[in-house]
Image 1 (tube, helix red, strand yellow):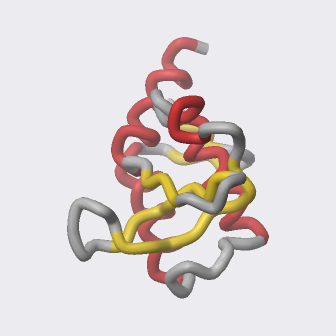
Image 2 (tube, rainbow, N blue to C red):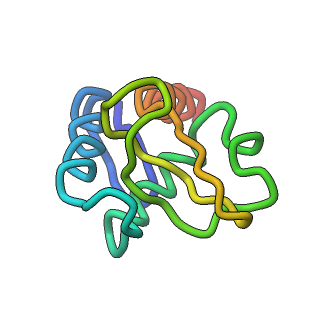
Length: 103
């Protein structure tokens, strides 16, 4: 099974989560994620089962920031009003894998 997230393809959920971890390591907190990483994170975000709710009125970009649930870094959507919304990498990857199975 190949998992599709944005324009990238992954053989397993573990490999897809590792790609997300790479993004977390390679970007400074609160600075916009750009380039190929931005495309991947946007694709990952929109795979999340609650993406529409989390997006609110819209998303301008994505950043790495500390989670509201603790000191760990997480991917965050920056909404049009400037607020941050975190999303679970694990849930998003699992949803992407489920979408791949359906198609």
